[in-house]
Image (cartoon, rainbow, N blue to C red; front, side):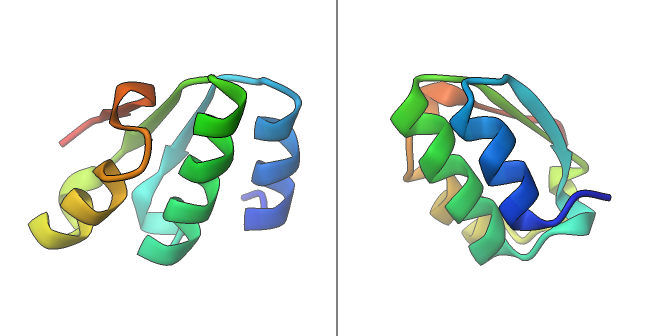
Length: 71
């Protein structure tokens, strides 16, 4: 598993990524998503059902057009 900072480095290069919601806290995912949005890239969040609905809504407030969640 990559650390949050490693994922952010990859995203900052413009890479499209898939992450597992089980491996990151909600705040870490928001940080990753913020960088995805800044680069205009895409992210898929797998196992998103492991997060509460309010957590998912918080994540989706940041660049929702760049996020796909897999429930």
